[in-house]
View 1: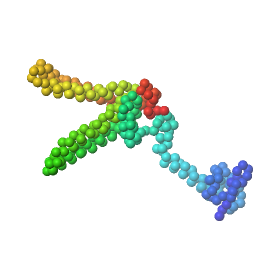
View 2: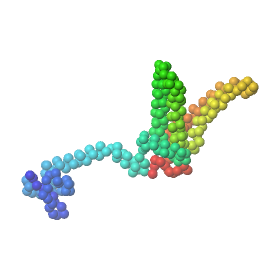
View 3: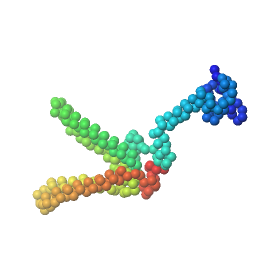
View 4: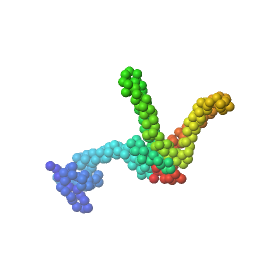
Length: 258
């Protein structure tokens, strides 16, 4: 077996096998002594040693490419950004902070939780459709008795589960762009207006004056409320898509930038 020696600090170190050279400080500029040539030479002048160095260089480049995504995350962190939230992290965080209406929420937190809510309601709609398909063909009296309860559960229970954390993360997302969370509550203008119109519509005949006003302005009010909701939601969407404020604002430190 060929033995190799490395010149270190005007002294020789070894003997080493070819594979051990790299672990003992071999570089392109190293002087190497080989038992085959019995002479000192530059590492690049010995074919087998030069090949060893080339393999090390290729492996280093390959390793750098394979870690591209990790390096990007590390680079972002080095530039002062916290790592982006994952889906599970966002859901857990929103439930943990469902009573927090004062701090800030970055985009990844908000949009992952919005997707979670959409999936919840899509699942309940599928369950509702399946219940509707099963009910007519099922002759079970017990099933028919509990069917209305099951239908209500598929509508009400998911709402109760997500409403508080969803409202909270909407408010925090607006805070993150340095805007008041009260903008989100403008969405409820349409709901309140719709309820008012329905209450007026069911007044008794003794309220004929009120009813006449409703019949004259009801459609106009409906379209006005609908236009307000559309405008508000377009503005909110624009705010939700904005990046976090890079510095601390009146709602607290940035959840994205260090």
